[in-house]
Length: 126
Image 1 (cartoon, rainbow, N blue to C red):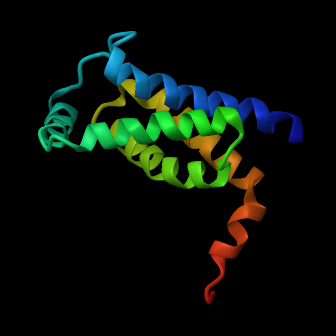
Image 2 (cartoon, helix red, strand yellow):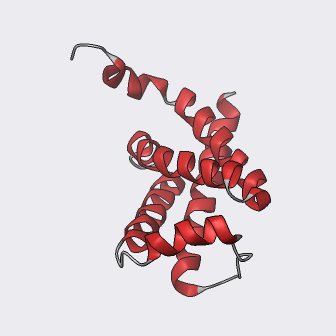
């Protein structure tokens, strides 16, 4: 299992880094969302700040994972994004579900790989 941690961390970080940078540099076109997903994403985009915040976090945390810096913190930040991406694709638009499942699997695997870093946060009384 230890041999899988670094490749999983680098893959997870690379996915986030590429999709975060794609928002600004448009390396590749994403498939158009269906009506339900489009309505949600359109509303979030119209806030003016939401996608910029999310994409900066994706780029920053992806880079940190690749560089093996602040890995537990990056995993915590990206876990909320992972859950939301998974739910959007599971409930609104199944086209991106395979990648969303991969993100969930990698996030869970890495969470368990770095479980010692999370144990202090998991105490009922600090």
